[in-house]
Length: 426
Length: 147
Image 1: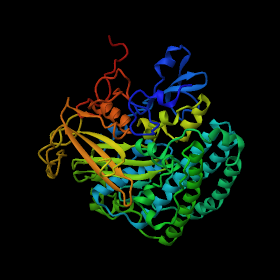
Image 2: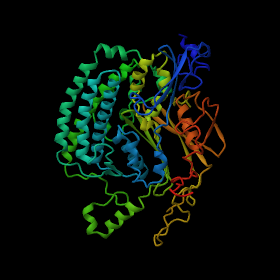
Image 3: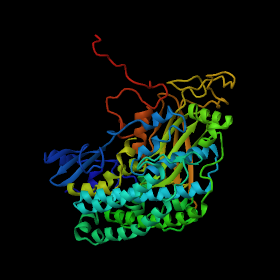
Image 4: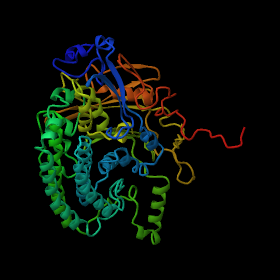
């Protein structure tokens, strides 16, 4: 094996970095090693059970050592952003949750939140707390999918069944509240699409009582499991400085020892009123990312409980802003009020108008900093919508994390970055 | 910016095409310049015509300083079609894929980028779909029996 230093051909970005140079996202096999003729270049993916979708990695192998790596993406590109430009503002909302189909509520919120920021609509407290609650349930859901599939890829099949058992309960809660299991489109500009149904609170309480025990189970299965430790510890190292330079966010950043969580540092929704910890682990390996995910699930359950405490006292309060230029009038008024009918018709056919301007709105999605940049020209359709997808950025770190790795560890490392290809390719 | 103002985190690079901004619609866009007249049906124009922009393309760099309190700033660069902007990879390595995306979908050139190639679309794709003059809608379909 050659040393790390000889791998990079250009000057390093700063002293001690492991980011390849000149291209930060491509690990290049050194020419002298290439000349030996012992390098085997293979395509890993785009269709492979453990690529979390359609990710293609072009890998140079020297025996079992990975000497070169380049990620090729775009196989799931569906042109969400262009599509959203063709829709009116409120008809563009259903696109947002489909971008990251695992953390749909968060995606939905980031778009709705950005529009609200530009419109300057005040959202009633009940909607704010419900959004917080759903965002956290969604975070647990997303982490469960990550935990189940990542463990499955490393051979822990039973983890997959346990994680998906709890995921099913969360999806049932979403179904109860919005009628859909995924892509609920429950967030409306100005608040929620419907009132919170009866029976949601006790069901969610039951889930909150159960979930910590389930997490204990996961930890009993994995946290001190010898096979799990050997397959995750010391692998996929990402230093603090490299993580920031590569724009990493969310669990990946916190597993590299950076105490940064948008929920805490730049609070949105009701996060400044709830009590939770931000788990930070210093080691920056796959195991650290696992620990952060597990700890975050526990914190999310606590946040959900606090949201429930508030929401249970808000019975009968409005769930959507009373702004008839933006919010659809109540269904019951349509038969009796001409004004309501006109407003309903105008919003549905033409859409509401958003004042001219630009806004970049960020939230902490389960995968990290999820940003939504919207630009309006004052018309009923977005001029430009851009999502800052945390998965897209996380994949940029693959080359850095894969320094001196074996082909078998690649699955653990790529999995630990927690990417959703729908969000990467958009 | 990174070293003096401590904006060490590049969140995002967004390219915006302002072709046809405040004018008659391009690419199926329904805006009309004259403003709308509530008594005239089908005048779905602007209530207020937005002020003109400096150039066709805007590049927005969203920067973040991980500090207490955190600071965010948006840097805008304006450029016309064919103009290139210098790559910021030496400062923020994460810019690599963001710049490739802006090149791929918006056709903005970055000089000194070590690997400026298409990222989301096929290598042999023609055009840059997020541009406002990129045709939208379906491709012409040949009907069966048609020669």
